[in-house]
Every structure is written in C-alpha cells, then in structure tokens.
Image (cartoon, rainbow, N blue to C red; front, side, top):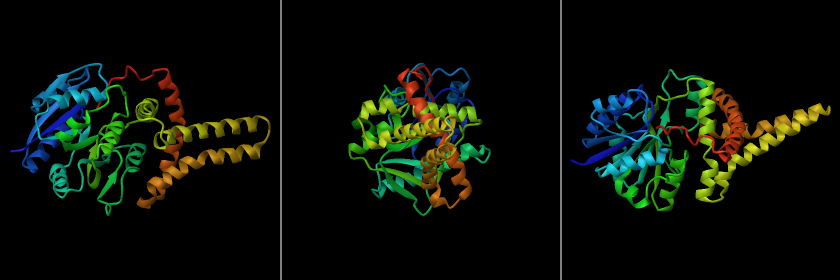
Length: 322
C-alpha cells in the first residue's frame, strides 16, 4: 500500500488538533492509502501534544523555531511517497485525497491545495475574509503561481528536489516556497469543488488585526529573498498611497480646505474598494463586497504599520503555529 506523510506544525491547538488528525485519517482511509501523522509542536503550553499522541501521531517538540523550520523537521522524518502539510486547525474533507490523486493521475498538476471556508459559527469578518479567496464552483480547478500552506499536497520528490521551506522567514514562507516550486517547473493547482474548513478563525477584532499585522510582516523578508517585484511591492505601495492620502486630507482639514479633504478621503477609499470588487465580483454578493471594502481598508492601514514593525524586528519571538 502507498503511504502519505501528513506534517502538522502546532502551537497551543488543543481545541482543534484532534479534529484535524481524525479528518486526515478518514481521508487516507477513503483513498485506501496508509497514513503517517507527524506533529511538530512549537512548545505548546496546553495538552495538544498529548491529544495528538492519542491519535497515533508522532510528536516532535521543538520550541522556538520558525514555521518553515517546523515543517522541514517534520518532512525530514516523512517516509511516504506522498507528503502533505496541514495547519493544526484545518479539517480536510473525506474526499480530499481521492479527488486530488485523481487530478494528479490526469496530469492536471503537481502541487495541490484545497480552498478554505469557515464554519457557520465564525463571525462575519472572519467568514468574509476567508470567502474572498473562494472561486465559483464552475471553476473547480485553476492554475496559480503560489498556494497557501494551510493545506498542501505533493509527491515527496518535489519537496526533496526543491530544498524545503525557507527557515529564515517568520511568515510568508508558504508564498516563498510555492513561488520557488513554480520556478522549478511544478504546476500549482488550487481546487474548490471540495473545501477544507478553517476552525482557527479570528474570534474578535483584536485577533483579526493581530493576525494581519503578523501576516503582513513578511513583506520585507520576501523582498530580500525574492528580489524586487511588482507582485510583492503591490500591497506596501498601495498602503503607502493610502497613508499619504489620509495625511494630506488631515492637513487640508486643518487649514480649512474641507472640500479638498473630502476628495482626498474618497481617493483613499478607492484602493480598498477596487480590491473588494475584484475579489467578490464572481460571487454576485453586494453585502460581501461592502464587508470586504471595510476589511481591505483596515488591512491597507496595517500593511505599512507591519512593514515598519518588521524593520524593528517585531514578531521575531512570536511562536510559530500551524
């Protein structure tokens, strides 16, 4: 029987790790493939490691390592022909492996990832933020330049040949790695006719903003490793534009040019509006567009803040988690 090695980085995910492991096992059983579970713990203070062991997972405790290093340590122990990386709060559907193995057999791709959705209990901002990445069901698969690592599936040979994740990145390691895979000739395929559930959704605004600050903190490191490119500079430049327009609007108000201030504020809203329309257009949902407009406006203000904080090495000691 063939074997798949599932590598799961974890930090304080006792609430979710059992569900994640059980779903991975069910998917492997449905695909009639052996399943090797490897959990790499970043020094959890909860009982997540003990729960993982009850599901038959091999648990490595490696505190203080960045997320890419955790994944690499787990992959180094993998003995399967297939290799999957799953975050510790992701519930894969039972048809996950059956469906993706079929796509690989049809030579449609080499590296695969399912789209994500949130459970019904998620607050509106967490659900809307996740839905922005969904595509209409008529586009069941699409070739992409990079994939997030919430769930990645590949033959282990691809991982061995590409050198694994960059261990110097605090975040954004998935984008850097899958862009590198694409440059090596791998075909990256995003699949949405079956979705995985993201149970680690943000439960409040403070958590949402904190996670976005952390995610956006990767721009400086990505520019250093990937070089200058419009793709990587797009959000920092848009964010800078919004900050400049906000500043000019405040100055205009202070000197009494109210009309000019209103025009500048409207211009500052345009980038977030365009982003929200682009991401929600195919879903034909005006409510989602308005929700994303507000979220993108907040995000664009956070990008520059995260960029500045990364210059000050903020986030450097934040535990890596899946």
